[in-house]
Amino acid sequence: MAGYITELDENVVREHVRYNNRYGIAIAADIYKSKQLDETKTYPALIVGAPYGGVKEQGPCVYANELAQRGFVVLTFDQVYMGESGGEPRNISSPELFAESFSAAVDYLGVKVPYVDREKIGVIGICGSGGFALSAASVDPRIKAVATSVMYDISGGRIMFGLPAEVIEQQKAKLARKRWSDFEQGQPEIIPGYPEVPFETADDLPETDPLTNEWNRFYAVKRGHHVNARYGFTTTSMLSMMQFSCLQYIHEISPRPILFITGDRAHSKAFSEKAYEMATEPKELYVVEDAEHIDLYDRIDRIPFDKLESFFKESLH
Image 1 (tube, rainbow, N blue to C red):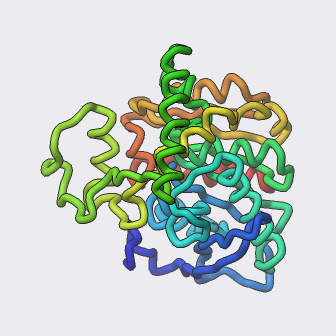
Image 2 (cartoon, rainbow, N blue to C red; image 1 turned 135 degrees about the vertical axis):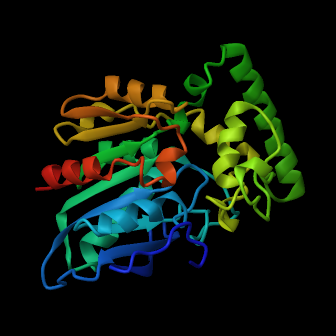
């Protein structure tokens, strides 16, 4: 499996590719396609972005493995400064560059992959990539349809945590001081969030708060652990998110359609509901029954692939 959290279906081919974004940073990606695909014809393509801090070998490979069997060419990628992609120092996050990564994938598919119909490209953003996918689509009309799955708007951190103004100012001051410390040290601080060696099962995990417990049930156990997704991001990365809004121009995606997928028990459900309210038609909010947030990362019995297939086949027709 080479670090991928799901076995590649026997009817699917995965090819590793590399290309640069418009800033010249190398992006590592995988292309999935059916073995029965006739490369003399063209097909609709989907770009799948990983959860914030995740890599292509985790949730995206689950989506790509399934959707490739349903007639799509699917590209998954590591964000810049993450995984196998370029960028130094490592593990820095930038909402602008993370949104740009979706458009860079459109560049590549539309020019370098002859069996992709460049007029039929859609995107799927899982968790934090949901916000970045919407940001990209609002400025890039080549993205013809957008689906988000248990989306987070990482850029709306102050809204996300419901923090009062005085707490936000305290965070700004703390992070600004950290910049001095990082400069003195010659490198940014980054604190590992998950163990180097994963726990066998969720039953082996130490008890923490409910939200951390949920993240650990995916990232800290063999279910979803990956060596390239242990650290999250540098401490000062959140400064970039505090002055950026992924959803500011969401209304400009119309008349291209948006599908918001969330779980009935997802702690992130409010993000999808808020984004749905902000978006203009055509739009749909689809709630999966008996599903928590991380269920829609990898559980093929919960991820609504039939819904995704019908949405994109209709939207990219």
